[in-house]
Length: 114
Length: 112
Image (cartoon, rainbow over the protein chains, first blue to last red):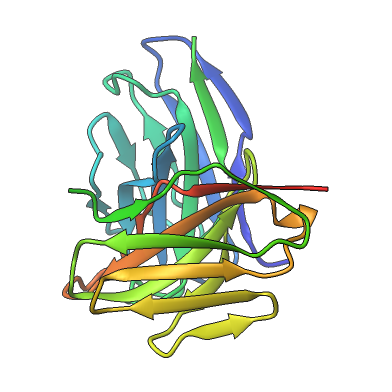
């Protein structure tokens, strides 16, 4: 089946640790995105990538890093510099980064910092 | 001012009711509009795009009012399964990137 997968579903981290969230898609989409969702707030863009080996900061990139070595994969690292990392993280992809292209979401990773 | 504003609700309605949500956007150059549905602790899923002429998909009708900069979603004959949070999404013209701006969502609960 074609789709977007994220792992793990739930992740617990101690303060001061870096963690990496996985996002894989087999839709042959060029563009991929990472969002963060906090209770009562809309989704906020962390990073996006329009093509392989290229990525750009979104609205709240501080404390996060990404890589795009393969078209199918766009992992997100939450570093210890991120002051409030507990949130629901959503990865999305679209055919291209065009203005009207629909974005499809993975099931999300719920990160809790202990 | 936020790009997209929604009434967070909650809307609590009985089965069979008709319910309407509105959403306003601040960028007059906004080009594309969508409604997504998000179930509790799940990812958002595209419900429908919103076209200038308005569009309908079964019990769901979406409309766009560019002059007043708002979009609406009407759900007729509500079902229990319609209970979810409905997200208003806007893409602004002028950006080469299809960045989506999300509203906070409107929570709907349909009771039997």
